[in-house]
Length: 307
Ligand code: PXP
Image 1 (cartoon, rainbow, N blue to C red):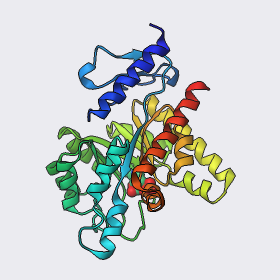
Image 2 (image 1 turned 135 degrees about the vertical axis):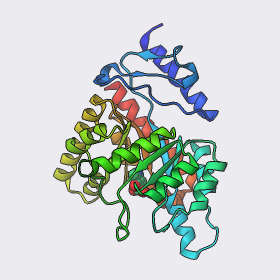
Image 3 (image 1 turned 180 degrees about the vertical axis):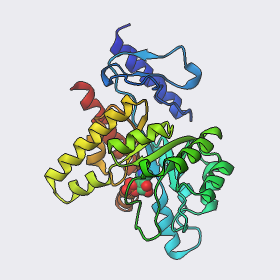
């Protein structure tokens, strides 16, 4: 069978299985594998049967962050609108996973949202959390598929910078180990800086999430040179991280256009997107915006595949 037919066939199986609620990870783990010869596999139970080697773009997953549905709810108190309902809708519209950030001050997602997400949704949960004893205990009790460690300060409006992995090596290494021992896939939310990426590998995190906020801000404010410099940082950071054997995700501030652009980087296998989707849902409805986002990401991947 021709390699490209085989790849398309493999991807079709993966998507079909995703539709049945299966979670597949790109079978990276071959440090230094260049993007032109990426190896990836379809779901775990087909491992061994369907490993594909060749010029491939691995699938790009969409994680929908439902924090700001909870933000709107909390403005009035009570139960409405319900982030778990939003999560189910997003999944039905094509989300591969649901992200929720339980902050220390509980300003949006609350403890019972996390418990209900775990009990009620059919796709993996990515639990965003500060590396504190309280949050580690909640993660261990809940058992999400993944946990993304983020820096957190009460006074910030959103997660404003990446983790300083280099400066907190011992503390983070211990938190990463505890979560991994519990079977949770750990990622570190970091700027695309070589020092932080290398430190993430040193603390044995299997995944990083590159902070795309500075790039998206520069794009939004029309600062072209800064946007270009940030883009190069993201691109080079993703290449470095893959070379170190890390799985690479990205997120923060993404919209349709920036998601389509970043989808061209084959090293990146997951985008986590929240604020734009919830904002746009006011005008277009959540299901439609998730579908349009999915299409933008697929378009970006397809263009890069043809290039
Ligand atoms: N990834 C991480 C680690 C985040 O902290 C956030 C913001 O909660 C996001 C992704 C999503 O960012 P946005 O809401 O701007 O799409």
